[in-house]
Length: 110
Length: 120
Image (tube, rainbow over all chains, first blue to last red; front, side):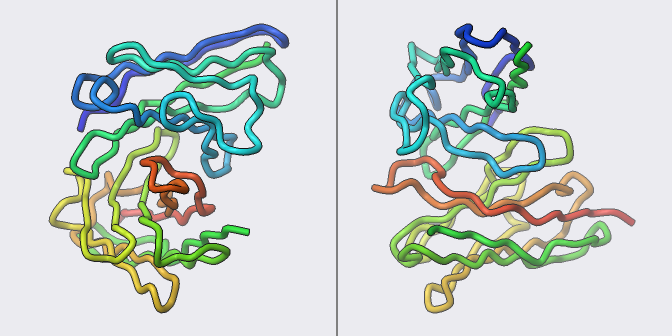
C-alpha cells in the first residue's frame, strides 16, 4: 500500500491550463479504471472532482478533466481560476477493497 | 442533503483507546459502504478502513490492521471506528466518507472530520 506519486506543487496564471500527474503501479492505477481526484481547501474536507478516471460528479465544472495512460493518471484544469487554488489528491482502488491516495499536490494560482 | 458528522476525537496517551462515531443523514445509510480516511497534520490523505453496506465485511489499511475496528449500526445510521493501541503516528483528523453513488469506488461525501491527538 505505497502512496501514489504526485508532484508536490504546481502553479499557473489565471486562464492557463495545467496538469497534475499521479503515478502508481499495475496493482492500482494501471490495474483498474477507478482513479478519483479530490480538491481540498485549507481547513476543509476533501471534495470529489473526478471519479472512474474521467467522470465528473454533478456540479463540478467541465474545466476539470481526468485521463489515464498505463500506470499514470492525470487531472487537467483548464481556464484556471483563483478559486482553484487548493491541494489536489488522486486516489486509486488497489484491489481487495483497499484504496491508496497520492501524496497531494499544492496548486498555486499566480 | 447528505450529512456526515464525526465525533469522539480528543487527546489520548500512547497505548490508549478511543472510539470515533460518524452520524449520517440525508441518504439511505444502510445501502452504502462507508470509509474512514485520515490526514495527519500538514500531511496527505490516508485511507484507513471500509465497511460494506450490511456490515458483514470490513477492510483495513496495513498501518491499522489488528488495532482498529470499523463497525456500523444501520438502525442508528451511525458508523464507528474503535481505535486501540494508539501510537503517535495515528495523530490525525479522521474523516468518514460515503461510497460514491452506484457503488463506484470513490468517496462522494465527506464529514468535517474529528481530530485525534496521541500524546503523553
